[in-house]
Image (tube, rainbow, N blue to C red; front, top):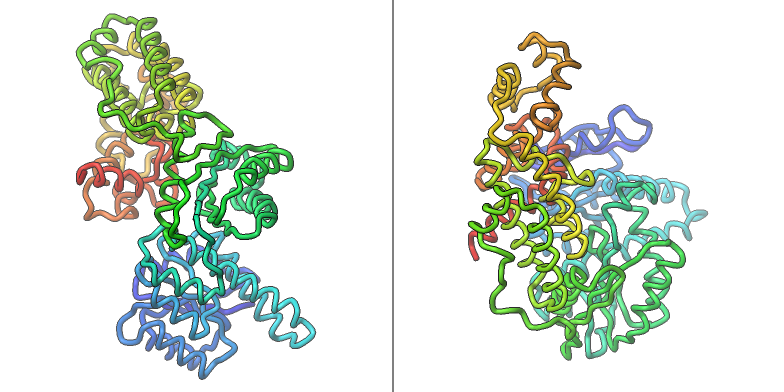
Length: 533
């Protein structure tokens, strides 16, 4: 069993790490925790261990000082650094001091942490076995080096790095500069959420790992490129002297071997091979236009039409609300189809801006329900999806339009059944309890007892009168409150989770994304980004 000491001045980080590392298992045992390097040394004096998980910035003695002392006094001990995005320079120093690996605190995934701990455990076992396992150990070290190199390159691609910083990274990892002109390719696995949800590849990690291996093999044929995993089924290829054949070959190979498809966005060629971030941003922007071009496309930056000066809405608010009130279902659907065809023919509205227009359109439908005292989230699900989720995550405009056109009859049917309709007193009582006590644990059996019904009868009656299950209604009330709390930057995500009745912030995040089509952190970023623009 490998013994672990956790060192971090943030109590929530320590709690989170102890939660991730299983207790009473045969692999790892957390022997203690410390809030500073000094506390850690005091523990290690009496309780030595094999692995130390340590933060960098801490009071009294920081992680770098602790690491240096550990290297001198306990050279066999392994250290895994916990860092923030702003700690890049410190991480470099920590790795030079002998840290085995590092992981970004805000991006910790339980599976990733356990994978790294198991890799360290394996490395320790190999070292104990001595020279007989030298080759295996050497391979492991090379693997760590490759992972660190990719992580650094990804940070350069996604962050604001100076030319000098990029040059230093290339020297450290003995990378040759990309021959000019530099091109970036943004690659997205099609239907990524659906693939991971259906569990065809057992896990999203296995899916991306498999695709990455296929792409790497194709890239090797062209010799001068680097493949980076960005996340969410997205990759970036940095390459000099782009041969267009590589893109088609990647698509064909992924489809042939894995029976899935990918789309590619290609940056314009940049004469300065150190403009990594600019190249990726333009490639990713090109990729976003698969919204128009459809699945399995290759979109080059020069194919994107100039943006329209003004986006014409399909109708004004007064006209739309009038059509809804008049139950003009066929007129609404036809106008949407015509508008979609116009957009597809021109392709001159940036996809992000167009999604916002669809959201504005949905808000108008929502306002027509609020006039009746109802809520857009209570409308019967169409194809088992919420409208906000579809608008924010539909991969193509045609898919979004088809879903919305199909949703309009569902919306109209709900509005006819629930417009200006007074709920029976018992259901009003249940709704009032949910509204007042949404932050508390809530069981259907307790609610049924309050109104003198059986659990089954209340569930059936609630669904009949509101169009929602009790569980879904509770979730909608909680998420409505969450949307407002997220607009206050003083609240942290885990605090909001607790305030609305979720003990597990991850459960809260997943539920929020199911309704809104984005995670709470993304919603907050979008809200404050929109206010500042």
